[in-house]
Image 1: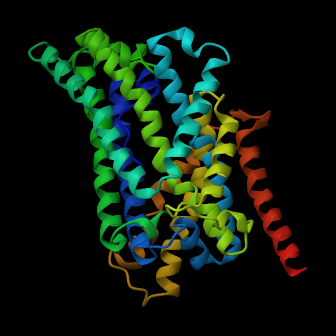
Image 2: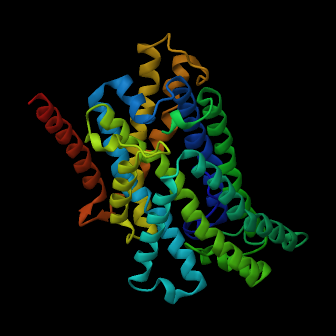
Image 3: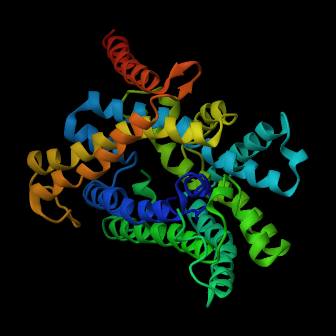
Length: 391
C-alpha cells in the first residue's frame, strides 16, 4: 500500500533537478515516513481494530474528533485515490496516445476503479497477496533500468547529477504492523532514490522529466523493450496501489456505521467478510476526481490528508497520558517527549504543503478554502447526525 516504485516522481525531478530531488528524497523519510511509521506502529499494535486511525482518534480525543478524522480521510481519499487511475492512464497513453485521448482517458480511469472494487470484494487476503505479486512485477523494470544506467555511467563521470485500517483481517497485528511500517519506510526510500541516482549518473537531462517520462529514460538507456516494460509497470502501479488503499479506506464507513455515525447499510458484509456496500460507495465517490491532473490531485490531497494525519499524531501522546496501562507491544522511543516529537516533522511538511497549495483550485474554490469548508462541513454533519439520533 505504501511502496509502488518511483512512478509519479518525474515532476519532482523535472522541476527540482537531480541534487535537490535526491536531497529531498534523502531527508523526507526522516521527517515524514519514519515518524509516521513509528506512530502507526504504536497505535496499530495497541489498538488493532477495524477502522484503524478513526478508532485511534475517537478513543483519544472523543467521538467528535473521531468523526472529523474519518470525514477528512474520506474527503482526502476522493483526490488521493484518483492519483492511481491517472498514473495508469498516463502510462497507457505512452503506448498509444490515441487510446487515452479525449473522453477515453476518464473511461480507462473509471475501469480501473471498477476492476479494483471487484477485486476488493474478494477480501483482504486476496488483495494483499495479489498486491505483493504486482509490486514485484512493476519494480522489475526499474531493477534493470538501474543496472543499465549504472553500467553506462561506469567510467564516464557523474553525468547530469552535478549540474545546476484493516487490522482485524491481519494475522498477529501487534507484531506485524510495526515491522511492516518500518520495513516499508525503508523500501520507499530505496525504490525512490536508486532510480533517480542511477539515471542522473547516466547523464539523462532532468529537465526532460514529467509524469510518464520513465518510459523515455528506459528507451534512451536500453531500447523499446525496456520502455514497454516500464509502461506496463506504470499501469500495474495504478492498479497495485489503488486496490490495497481501497481496502483500507473502505473500512472507515463500516467502522463509523458500527458507531451509529453512518447508515447501517455500511455494516453489511459479503461471504468473504468484506463490507461490500462501503466498497461500492467509496468507488462511486472516488470516480468524481478521475479527470483532474496529477499535480492538482497531489496538492489537494496533501491539504486534506495532512489535516487528518495531524489528528493521529495528536492522538499518540494523548492516549499515552489517558491510558498509560494500555498494552503497547511497540512504542515510539523516547517516552512522552518522543511521542510528542514524532509529529513535529510531519506537521512542518503539512503546513508547508498547505502554503504551497495556496494557489491551487478545486471546483472553482481556493484549495485551502476548500479544505476549510470540508472541515466545517464535517462538524455540521456530525451535529446533524446527533440531532437525528436524539429524535
